Amino acid sequence: MGGCSFHIRCEVSAAALEDRALAASSRDGFSGALPPLPDLDQPLPPEFRRYLESLPPRQAIAALSAYSLEPARAMDEPGTPLAETISAPLLEDLDRFLAQRFVDPWPATALVRDGYMTEFPPAVYVRRDPDDDGWFVQLHFRGDSGMALVSAALSAHWAEGWYSARRIELDALLRSSGVSPRARVEEAGTRFIPTAAQGYAQLVQRRPGAASSTGDDHHPKRGVETSARTVSRLISDHPFALDRAQQELLGDHALVDALGDRFAEELQREGCLCQLCAPDFDLARIEDL
Image (cartoon, rainbow, N blue to C red; front, side):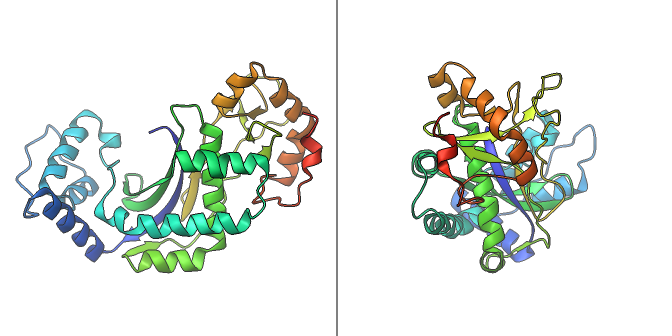
């Protein structure tokens, strides 16, 4: 699944898990009883067995088959009835929040907000976290087969800002469905700047060995063990990255290199310059690029 995700780390109540399993069992025509599991060469980890027991039989068998092939991804499940319950209210709230913040959107913002996010609306999942036997709500933004990774990362960045701004209301919404977010949020540190006609550019981690015009490479933090996180990893030979679709239209890297010369140090020092983070940014500063 390519793209970028915003994660809300959480606990899921036993009642929500039971409702989820029963709803899936009813949908698939099963009673919800877990069939005997075949023997494996090694015992199943306790957290994976509990995960299997939360699934209807058809999904449990499929998950066990996936585990035998690739244990690390076996709990990376698709949408569930619980995710379906919370998906619409979460995405409607995100849409209202962005509409309120972007009443007069910049051209770069409109390209992502009204273009990319309309064509590729985010998906909501509730997934098991194999790292700590917990759960997370995932808002996933598609990368369009690698052509829109910056737009996906920016959308996840906006989702991070949305959750931070509306934490009280969103946590109450989630708790009403049996999902209890954890206590602390840490920002991912991703940083963006608008361009005149190519959407946004993202300040990226430099490829090892690549020359740095600033002498101090910026390394966006990957999400750590916190309540919410943004997962975004872009590595480039250049200080900024555009969506590949936009980069291919340009044909060269003159724009991202010019952005690096003019803005890389500022973004490293001051932070993100997207419309959500820096609504007073003077667009005249990028008109000649």
